[in-house]
View 1 (spheres, one colour):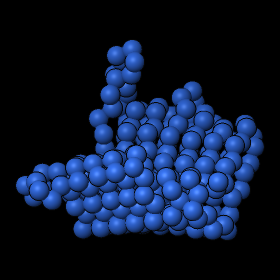
View 2 (view 1 turned 180 degrees about the vertical axis):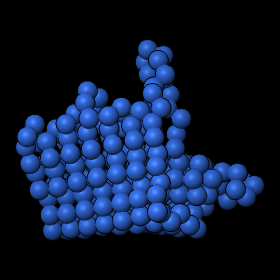
View 3 (view 1 turned 90 degrees about the vertical axis):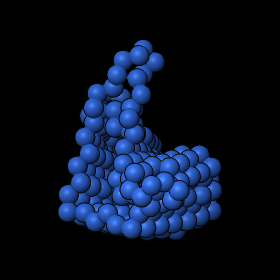
View 4 (view 1 turned 45 degrees about the vertical axis):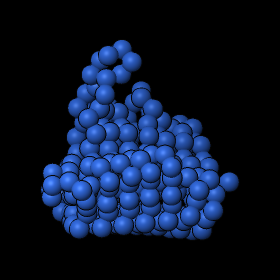
Length: 212
């Protein structure tokens, strides 16, 4: 169930003004073309609210959406961002609310794995009240050479039983050949990170309530 799009090089898909409720995955985007998601209300889907899989050359733009009230026993519940190596891709999320999502493991609100030449931009958005059973209540990032920009983003009231109540940045593990992945980049500008909590049983501050 839900809505699924797949674009080829030069293709365009537009998904707008929908109520997407009660599916396994609310909206799933794949392909190497351009996809626009706008003004969608995505709620109470059984696993993931929005899955964005960027192939080389893809440009995915999500604006003015609400993603809320998802629960997943695996990693990622609100928005899941992944990529395929081989060329640049851009995922942009703006003017979007990601709230009250819960993962039993990592990334209650947003979980993103980004390789070299992959860029994720989140701007003028709110990520609040999300929960993770392990790390990254609001946002969980694995930057294998990729880049993330948070600009004018409010990350508030998120919690994790492990590290990084607001934002958690993982240490990338070597690939199958044992080669270390390139370092990624996280830039946070003009944003508010407040009232997030991590591991309530730890010494205050050591587990990164805001950012770890």
